[in-house]
Image 1 (cartoon, one colour):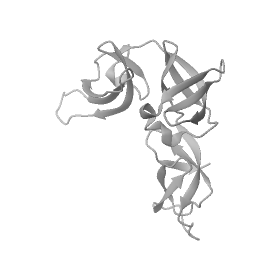
Image 2: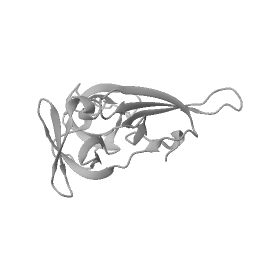
Image 3: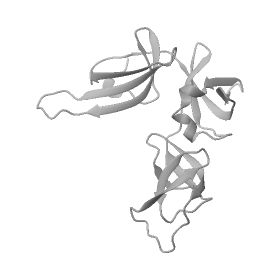
Image 4: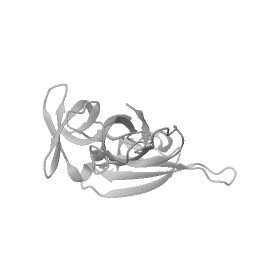
Amino acid sequence: MPKASDIKRGQIVEIEGAPHLVKQVEAKSPSARGAATLYKIKFENLLNGQKREVSSKGDEIFAEIDCQKRTAQFSYTDDRFAYFMDLEDYGQHALELESLEDELNYLKEGMEGIVLLIINEQAAALELPQSVVLTITETAPGLKGASASARTKPAVLETGLTVQVPEYIEQGETVKVNTTNGKFMSRA
């Protein structure tokens, strides 16, 4: 059973008998002496989609739900679902697009390295890799002589995600993007 201080994004825990997916974890250290670090955790109920925010001390314990983790490949989306192929048994799993609002910006057809969380033979959530490689479809032209300084410009990626990239990056280049914070990491 994980403590609040050990909980990571993408983990599934039980709250009031229902499975909840950890969407975001934020640690807040109080300024008072002897005060415990507080963890602000955002959850999503996997049964009804409700969002919940909990503040807890680092030693508070959450019950972990037994789930399978299966490696998968993103196949395609339709108007309601995103479909994934299980790379172990080649079965198809579907997740509602509404539950994937944050993850859709990082998914492209044929992408591997995705982990599906399966509860009772149904796909409940997914874990993205730490970073993904995407192609820039739209950005201002690169500047000749631009250095690798802190000056950036917006770039639209093939999935529709907009990230800030260095001035010297041009349209058509592939870049590595961090999936936890949506920031440019490097050229790919």
